[in-house]
Image (cartoon, rainbow, N blue to C red; front, side, top):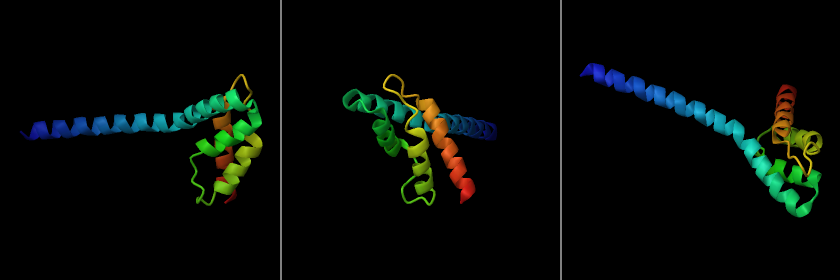
Length: 110
């Protein structure tokens, strides 16, 4: 009987590791998905890529406003990353890379 309990425990651990790895993938993909959807909707109606970029960055950046790094990260992202997207291409992966570099820069400064 103990073997079954240990086997079941091992299976549960493997399931949890798999679930956590899937969650990590989902979390990293969430900015890209959020930004691409937001930008696509915005640019269809407003036709202003930079304004849509800023609006979607505000909506999709995961750093909460009460985080001490938020002013630095968001300011950097708005100024450096909002002009990457065009009406034809949201370039969500490039924008995400830009936002991540802002986060790294800001965390080194503080």
